Length: 281
Image (cartoon, rainbow, N blue to C red; front, top):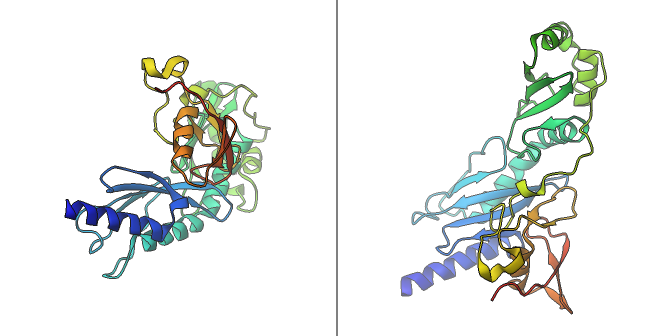
């Protein structure tokens, strides 16, 4: 029991060093934690940390929504806060990579998935005429010419391959991704149609499930998909309203006015408000 209490105190002290406001998730054994990290442009990234009994003598295991994981410099005096700082610096060094992905996602017709992960170095882009192109971005040099693979009818992709082979040397790093493609292919590319996004495919940022469990105590919310999304354009994290309500109730800074809870998004700290429901017993 004493050992468990000591572990709990050490875990709490470790989180306090990083800052409770950055904590996204913590398991019951205090061995798995996830923190939100903002890059220089305000984009939200999640850093996942796995610690074992060798910590802090040995570094924790780090993962996150980045194209490659940095090597964490560790010494006998290092703490978890040092790993978070190094992860933040790594995220900031990838600014050109993030901006390239944003350029693609915002200006082209990206398909499968509709909500690509930041760690993905590739994008499937519909360029029209039943043609799909798989672009692979070099995370360490994202402004250079990407690798590409054409998919579609031979009659359609054959001239595209020829145009790429002939004009890819015209790629200019100071141009946007879309402008470079227009220069290479010689025609305007279609933008994503204004169709309603399939909210059911979004995972909750708290319980990490697409749908709530099917339980009688959840009433009309039983089995429901995510129904709340952060308004921050750089976050847009989805939640189940019930999960967000429970999370806000666990935070001391949350305020309540009548039947509405006011607090901050677990990922980006932007203001959120959720109506209290009584579906749980």
